[in-house]
Length: 101
Length: 204
Figure: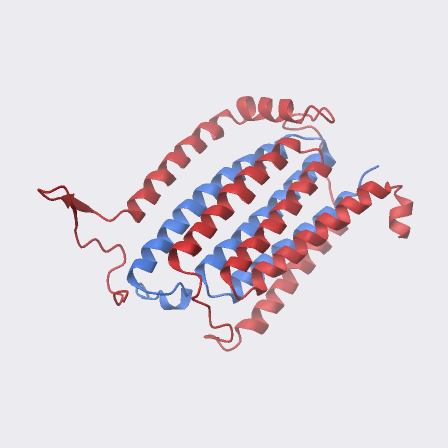
C-alpha cells in the first residue's frame, strides 16, 4: 500500500502557500516568476494525486497541458523581462509604474 | 508513526516520500529566501526534481520524465540564461518595503489560504466523486498508453489549440526580444530606435 493521498495534498497546499508568499513578498521579477512556477507545480501535484485516487487518467492529461502553458508563459514572460532590462538596469517590480492610472 | 503503521505503508514508500517532500519544501523555501537569483533558480531545480520523484511514486511515469526534461531542463536553463544575460550581481534590496503592512498582511492571507485548503480537503474526506470519468488508468507500466490515448482522443481539440498557443508564444517572444533594424549598404545592421517600454531612463 502506498502513501495516502492526504499527505500529497497537504504537501501541495504547503508548496502553493510558499509560492504565494514569494509572489507577494519578493520584488525581483525573475524570482516572482519562479514562485509562479512553484504554485503551478503544487497544482500539478494535486492533479496527479487526484488522478491516482480516482483511477482517472484525465488528471494527468490536464497536467500535460499545464506544463505546455507554463512553458509558453515562461518564454513570453522572460521576453518581457529582457525588454524591460533594455530600458532600465534593474528588475524590480515596483519601478514598473509607467502605466499607473 | 501510528499513521504509517495503521495504513500499512512499506518502508521504501515512506522513505521516498519523506526525502522527496523534504526536498520540495527546502527547495521552495530556498526560492523565496535566497538573496542571489542564481541560488533561487538552483533551489527551484530541487523542488522540480522532488515533484518528479513524487510523480513516479504515484505511477505518473510519463509526466515525471516530462517534468525533468521540460521544467528542470528547459525552463530552469532559460531562467539561468536570462539571469546570466542580465547580470548576476544586481541584488535586490531585501529590506525594501513599499507598502508598510505588506509582510504581515500577506502572511495572514497565506495562512488563511493553507488553513482553508487543508480544512476543506480534510472535511470532504480528501477525495470525493465518481471514478474513471475521463478514462481509466490500467495500473503500472500502462501510463504512457493511457495518457496518449486520453490526450489524442478525449482532449484532441485541446491538444491542437495548445500547438497554436506554442506558436503564438514563440512569435511573441521573438517580437519582444528583437531589436528592429535595417541592413546598410556594407552589410552592417543599423538599429532603429525600437522602444517596447518608452518613458524609462536609458540604461547606462
